[in-house]
Length: 587
Ligand code: GCV
Image (cartoon, rainbow, N blue to C red; front, side):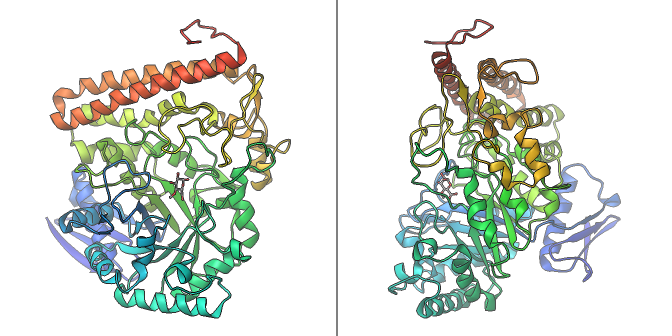
C-alpha cells in the first residue's frame, strides 16, 4: 500500500486525517499526527477495513495522554503485578533498548504521549534523578521514547531543595528555594529539552508538601510552575491529599470529602502550567465509586483525570477485570448540570501503568486490554466499552469470531462479576491490608486510613448524604439530589452514599442482606462459568497463552470462594438472618 503524507496546518496538534484510495493520504499538522495516522491505518486494516474507502479525521480530546509508572529504582514496582521495572534494577537504570522501543511503539499506537517512569512515592535514589549524576542516563531514555512522540515526565520530591539541594527549607516563599527550582529546571531541560514536566505527590501519605510549612497547595505548585514555565514544562500536581492518620472513632471526618476540601477553595489560584491530577473516584480506585466531585467542580484550573490501569484493588491481574465498563460508565456520568465527565474535556488524562518486565507485559495477557482501553479513552472519551474491547480482542487474537466474541463477552462481564463477590452496592475496603488482594472484612475497619464500612448488627455503610457526612453537598444540587435519595441513587453506589438496614428492599425486591448473600453466591458461579468458557477456547488458542490465563482463573476461583464464604459468614453471624435460599453458610 502506498501512503502519501501531507502537512495540513489547519488540523490541531496530534490530529490526523486518513483519506483512502489507491494511494492512502495521511494529513497532519505535525510529526506526531503523521505517526498516529500511520498507526491508526495499520490498526484499521487489521480490523478489516478497506484502505481504499477510508475517510477518518481523528482529533484527540485530551492534549496530554500520560502513563505514570510507580517504579522504584531497586527494580520493584509499587502496585505492580507484571514482574519488575522496565527501567530500573538494583538502584540504577537498567533497560533493554529493544523492549523500550517496542513499548514506545505500543504506547504511540494507542495515542499515549507522556510517561513518568519513577514512583510518586520518592525514595532517596529517585529523588536524585534531577541531578547531574543521573540526568545523562535519563536523557538516553528520553531519546529512546522520542521517535514515538512519547515525552518523559519526572516525579519529584516537593522537599527536594532540602533533600537533594541541601537547603535548610523547601518553603516555596524562600528566595533560595525559588532559585533552586529555577536552576534545577534549567539543568533538567539542558539534558531533556522536550520534558513534559514534573509530577508531584505532595502532602499525601507522608510525602512532603507545602501544608506542613503553612503554605497552600497553590503556593507549593506555583513555585515549581514558575521554574518550568520558561521551558514550556507543566506541573502535574496530585490531589490525593487526605488525613491518613485518622482515628476510626472519628465519624465526622470522611475521606472522600478531602480532595475537594483541599483544592476547590483554591480554584483559579494555580499558574497556567499547573494541572491538578485528580483520581477518578473520591477515595482510592475502589471497585465502585462515584466520580470525584472535584473533577466537575473546578472551572478555573486545568484538570487531569487519573485512572488506575494497574489492578490494585481490582484483582491484581490474577482475577479477570476489564476497566472498560466502569471507566466508560464514569465518563458518561453527569458531573455538572447537563454535562458528563467526558464532555468537561479535561486537557490531561493519566493512567497508572499496569506494565512490567514480564514477557507478556501485564502478567495476565488479558490485562493488556486495560492499557489499550486507557489509551483509546484518553484519545476519545465517548467510545463504548464493547467497541474498545472487541477491537482489542480482534487485534490480539485475530479474526476468529468465536474467540474474539467470547473473550469480548467475558471482559465485558468481568467488572460486574468481580464487584459481586468483592464489593456489591459500592461498599469498599474489605480487603487484606497492605497488599490489597483477597478478603478481610474488618482489615481496614480500625485503621488510620479513613476506610470504614461501619457494619453493625442492624445496618451497614456510611451515610454520606446531608443527614450524614454531607459528601453529597460537594456535587451540584441536581446531581446531589440523585445520590441523596435511595430511589434514584445508582444501585452500585447505594452503600457508598447510604447507611442502610439489612431489611432495606432493593428494586428487585430482595433485602439488602439477601442481596449480599445472592451476589456472593452468584459471583463464584460466574467465575466457574468463565473457567468453563475459557476451556472451550483451548483448541483455538496458543497453548501457553491458554495455560497462563487458565492458571489465573484457577486462582480467581479460590479468591472468589474465600470472599463468598468470609463475607456471608461475617454478615450471617452479625445479623442472624438466614439465607432465604438455604445455601451453605459456614458458622
Ligand atoms: C503510590 C494508594 C496506593 C499507594 C499509592 C497511592 C497513590 O494509596 O495504595 O500505593 O502510592 O494510592 O496514589 O499515591
